[in-house]
View (cartoon, rainbow, N blue to C red):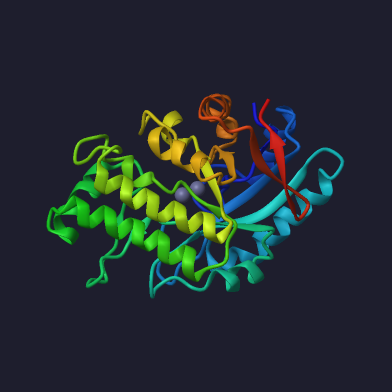
Length: 281
Ligand SMILES: [Zn+2]
Ligand SMILES: [Zn+2]
């Protein structure tokens, strides 16, 4: 059981419950902290993002909970920022508007270089993933995956944020059908992004959601990719990416065991504005 979870979604974006339900569950589990990370607003209509008109009530709602539960648990307000080149807003602008304690940067929508259409690589429907490869990348999986990683790298180069969200989620709907995580060309992209992560001093999130949603048989990241995160000595933290209160701790123990197996000794946690290392044992 982790003692905190900094990546979760409430009804303010695509989660299923009000923030207080997550806080109550976290207190029940003996957590010391929880952080809400609603999907950032985008300049077009989506079914999953925080609505611009709900920003004030998101701020107020978390502020009220911070006060109400201040003797029991630390509560943080964040956003999971979507980065789409030339489309999404600067992260600093949303950090300020939503008064975030920290930011998670993630890529869910991949923009091909010469098209305005977007490839959605997340969600439950792998047909969308498959069709995107055909329609937007002419069936060239290498081109599609490379674009995904380059978009992540552009985000790291151009935006300010602390946590890189589920950075190899591009493997989820692949399920070893089009490529293997161990393929040389794929691992070259992993090497490239990890060099940059190290350089920028970001934290890598180890995300359990694919496992409990049964969309994946591994963590994001896991295997050789996670081993490389360790080899680079990049700090990590475990996130469940919960979309309902019952999910806040799912597979966190498993993730902890995996991290120990790969030689990690600590994870990062956020303590009222300061990032600290916590031993895993
Ligand atoms: Zn995400
Ligand atoms: Zn998320």
